[in-house]
Image 1: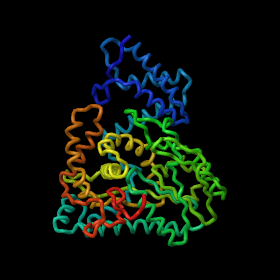
Image 2: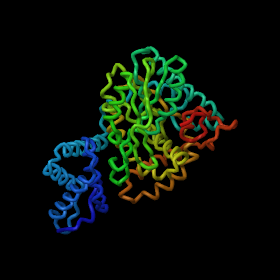
Image 3: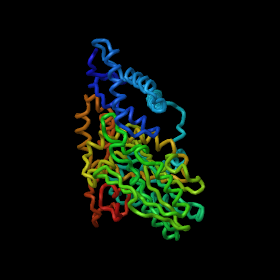
Image 4: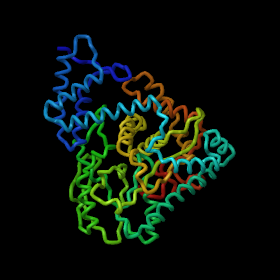
Length: 452
């Protein structure tokens, strides 16, 4: 019987073998179909390892695909057909994504809001902000304050349009859903939209779905063993739906409270009721995820999607990636407000992005309106704060096969920031700062006039 010590990744890299990765993969599949018993996943992983060691010839290093094949067989043989199906579907989906990336398909994605992108690109060209070179030129000419004003005006106009659309459906809309991927600016957008709707006489009652997280030990984990808060399966979707239906019917419900410090949920903590003229406001990563509000008729919802749809080309002629903008935002925010090191954010971003591609991006074009939260002036501010970090990470992760994703992102952002003219801002909206206290960027760098 061979003792498995190494495994070959799909890239060909040889890395240490860890049983926990099998456990995490099985548990993630179980969670997708409603299972929450991690001990079962651990026992099944033990069986996978036993079969692997029994069938692996001496000197042979198994590949990831071989281990996954055995895992599927063990799941089915132990009567976990639904979990096996979820495991297989997830595996097939990842394979499809890799194939699409490799082929760089010429077919336009159905998940891209093409009309909105044209509007944003047209605005960028009109304001001479469509390339990093033009951004730098305007900064050099002393126009940074003007860039901030132009950008914030466009962002606020987007939110005003959304509020007017909701106002036109006064009486029929019972839930306003504000969704978008991590660090897209949902919180600031929610606050600004709330203020506009209140002025229109609409009463908004926020429902914080983060309070519906399962206890931490029931969360799925990623391949490194980190708890995954980015997946909708970490939320008690059944309870959310039950409460929404009862609230719309005028009943009182008791909202739970989730303690992020302890990782525990305390049920029935706060009473909540909405009146006939109230609108439930949901600000959530997964607000567009179908199961989040499946028990509520679509006519009763207004769905708003937020994404930094920046249309700016870097020195390589390629558009700046929105996910890189959000990565930098989250790094700065978590370091400022959550005592979370930027390096940890980089290392964990792979499962943030993976969850987005599965559970958020496919629903972009199901929304009633899309708000662009991309700010051309955030790049020079992030350059001043993060460039030295990315320069260091490129060297640190260069030859680490376990951190290939971190290296890829670090290298890409490093080359981008290297081309940007930095602008210092200490996070305090003093009289000398061009960035106002109600700027969306202050949600991340600090100094906002809003409470988060």
